[in-house]
Image 1 (cartoon, rainbow, N blue to C red):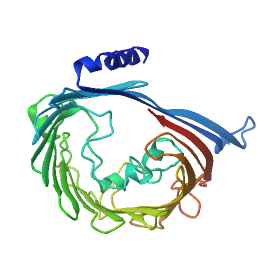
Image 2 (cartoon, rainbow, N blue to C red):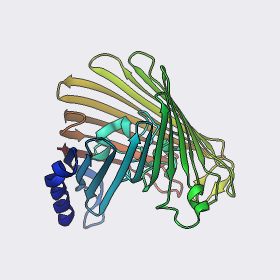
Image 3 (cartoon, helix red, strand yellow):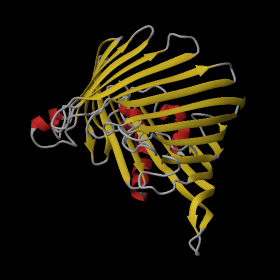
Length: 375
């Protein structure tokens, strides 16, 4: 890590010579659960405990030549290193090789995934976030209905012949090496249309393993309504060797009720599957829903109240229910340094208080604080 930091520092020193525009930035997130359930004392009894972790220690550097035709970006974190280089010979075409460290390119989700909690998602003060995974249902989450972006290394081509239409193509040479057929089998292609009322995108992601014929995501983002943004998503798997996959549908909304009060809401459902598999049941109806009212107290303080519900209804038997209640306070700016403090209360999926194995499901709780500082 020290060697990487030294390299990035050198980039900053020579950046003015090598690039017309160069910048180095850093980001640190630390979270402490001041109090939390789930601990056991030396006698084997339930006890109140605490925990802590550094969610992020990151340094980034980026730069481009004075013509804006060539550029590069690098990121160093504990245990990982990522980067990409790009070339933009004309305004209508861009080529990129590499990754952005897993954040993902070409995501089409509006407020339904990471943007639901925004920077608080990275701190652990809000949980479960359901942006990348689900505490409740495991594999089923909001990105089943909304395309979450390409996060691995690849060859990316962005073609934009006119302002309203773009075509994004990803060829996964890094993750699907070997026969060219494997590379094209894992192809991602996205048609992105921007209209006066909003955005429409159709994304296809290939399956290099040939178990399926890939996935298709349809996104409609509506921004023509004053103070309201709506996101509609549909995701489905094209059947191959493995059939019976469900269809995922999702809806998200952000409403500015007044200058100081707002509301975000999201819901997604998995419907219509008819096959069982080892990790779950395609035949189950699965639903995730969250609401997040927020209140601006002053220029540097905002209060949020997150309430969420999960339900899995199997083909036979009673539905399993899980929930979370998560109020928290943010002190600082949304896209800048901040302090966060909250209370988390949640329960995993349960039927009459018991999980699928018949064991009692406990209600968990924690009191987290976090510092999220970037420069």
